Image 1 (cartoon, one colour):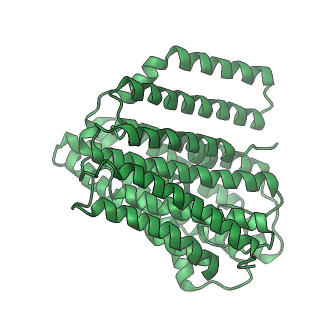
Image 2 (cartoon, helix red, strand yellow):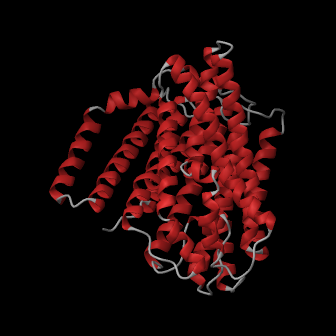
Image 3 (tube, rainbow, N blue to C red):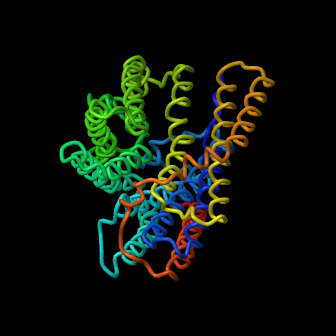
Length: 445
């Protein structure tokens, strides 16, 4: 039973959404400048995610026999193969991941509300993003790929910022009776789920250190030994997912008991249950994981691949873009007042829903022997439903909400938006160029 990768779908979805978001942010001249800038950050996060998943898709298609996985990028366990095009793709992945990390931290400093102020605040943020994206890929390529684990400090910092904002909001709502504070806790919680669900679904394995057993198998395949600081960096990345989920579970459980369930609480509970199941899956396949560093790696069960596709794949590739768009519109980061912008938002929402639904149907077909005529009929039903209910679906996304009032911050000059777009385009091109250049020169091989 083969499972299809969702990376190409995520690449197309994120690139389209990123382009539309950047267009909306640049042309909404009468919209709140802080919200426009935050939307611009979101747009470039979409673009960098799309570029990252595009590279992953190319590697999966062209180099299907190559050893490549999530840990290779996050933990810097890559060792150049000497194949120029393959190494270039991996170098790009490191560069795009660095861009995602710094852009996410910048977003945490601006949403749900601006944590900085002053005339040069946004200019400093833009400068740091550009400098980081220029320097870090070079340092990683020449200094050794394990250096990339230092970025776990930034990933943890971003997680800590949103977690503290969530705690502040949920305490203000439940203890002080401030209903408006829910906008802050909900925004911070949704952002934590969107960016950290990939590690959150291993929360129990992290808590009981079962992840270390899996990672020992990864380390056993490397030529050199790893330092204590490196291993601390690896565990810090896992904690960046464990810590916020623990806080979200306590906060949403208390709020659900007092006020009933919400979108955030349902998502948090689902992620927690997946993490619980994943721990027992780890126990079931522990002998296979141990075999990787004692003898030879035994092939993992096919059912595990199916489960990972239905959980990690759906969460990362299909659900996260939906969550991003919901946050963008719910917090009015993009202007939906004009007819022109509202039409563009309709295109964005319907396109996203159609891509997600069709991808999910195709994925189910690859897992379960369903006749193609049945899946084609289901897809036609989805298309008819979305077209027929287009107005109500769009209305649900763009309905008036008090959440938008919580997003406040300093102004930014109108001409800066075009300059930021140009700067980030140059940075993206720079990462692609140096990756190809140094890979073909055999750097690190």
